[in-house]
Length: 384
Image (cartoon, rainbow, N blue to C red; front, side, top):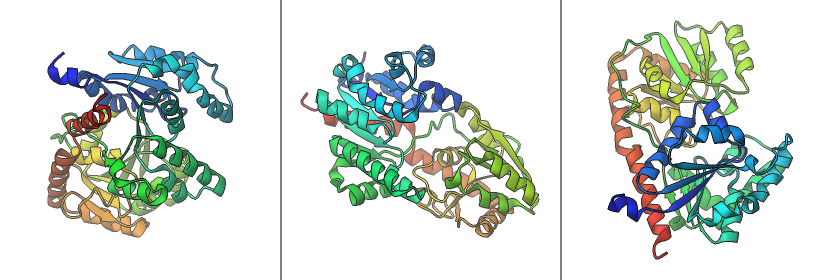
């Protein structure tokens, strides 16, 4: 092991998002993407432990993750069918996994859901803790229009997790502001760790384009505003290809049929196949009502796509209009206007795609995030 790896020889336990397993990551095509940063940290000398909400199936998948220890909770407990009972089971994590947790230096949450497990473990075993959030859960809960009880519960688990953590990592400046605003956390306790892109994989490729086609990649839910996107392409010569799954698929299929829109629902695609898909389209669109730090947008930009995104939190902080993409409103008419501008101007698309690629290389590489992570670990463990 080289001197750099020796310096970074910490043991870090990643608490998976509650109710999420390695098997689910694999099923949804996210396994390779989600594991990649931890493989890099492992190669830098950090010992990685995944604490998952899986069972025997996670043990099998773990065999493909050389050098990463996987500890599935439901190898130690029966998995209840009832979701409420599974939530109560989460409180047993510090006891059931105590031998593993005692041997770790740093605890880290993957998202806010399940963060209470890391926080309780920190209080019991007095280890360092990082609260990592790809998006600010309480703000998302309010935007989704949930009732008082759910919002109150989310605010309580968020407050507990943020307060217990030694440091908080969020994806955007707006998320950091929200953590300060709603939870009164000191700014010095928060740092920005935006989503990373493996820029050697998500690269521009000289391949034939589906010139009359538009691409969307992501979940099929209310947040993503896909009904308005389908309305925007209805009655045009454009074809819309939708990659992803979600609870609104049947409803959106009916909407497309009723409007006579030319829409193809392609289902989930493994992450390692996405670079070829992004490169096959002249325009990528993300018309969401709100976002955190959307990975699919960053991936498309890394591939040199001309991107169109809605002018909302989490997107407008990424796309620089006229330089790395274009912005539009969330209504069908505005989305259509933005698409018309891009679809009809190949030279503009090429220029925006080049600008998007350069922006990703400057701000969102895997190497950049690994350096930030290691610097944070060093800071937390200083003087141990």
